[in-house]
Length: 331
Image (cartoon, rainbow, N blue to C red; front, side, top):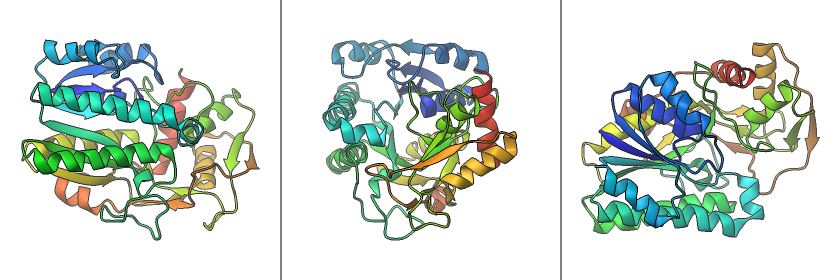
């Protein structure tokens, strides 16, 4: 199949594009490098030994984005492109609504115009808000605690509304938990611009001495050590979940929704201590106030994806820490 990957040079997008190419699919990547770099294009080609179409386009530029559809016969879209920092979304909500929802509306219009009916949408566990209990199933009540999560939930609602009236569409909504790790080659991984918003790249920057210490946002949550607990999933496992979802769409299921996580929760200190043990590096830290929009605990029940997609996470927290450091020290 020929797959359009929006945001395909980003962290999850680049790993998914790599897995798609290695599985024999044709790939078209659209990315404006807002949170990635041009070298990722060459690194994907080096890893896979395969070429692909690339367009340095902002999805909000509808005229230029339409050229991608004019110039290619697209079988399916995997939509990653979005601003994604929870804390920043609280500070810049208008920017997040404009970018995440606006660009998605452009994509939906073009998919309809060019009869592209298969979509995998990159959603997030943030749509579960502050869950009453864990693990979280797909049937949990949906709510949000920050503008980033609200953009994901709005887009999910849009898809549910659209699919009710357009039975030709097949859509997989994938609710990610917390991706970490990197490709085994060390050539692609999570490398955000500026001060990282996610935990693992922050740890790696402290490990190199680029940052003095790790800020731990709150140690007074009701968790086993007071720090926030999350379901960390290796980015390669996450990428493979997208390939399994594409296979599912070939069955014409209509709209389907899956959690992609390991089903295990680890705290900030669990991740820091494992990183230190596996890589032999002490990570200095200081406790600071909680971030707006953060919650105490969030981990998945991935049973539905296990059963319906034949997918499960294979890598553990040690692999995530080892591969993250392998990528970052090789940069």
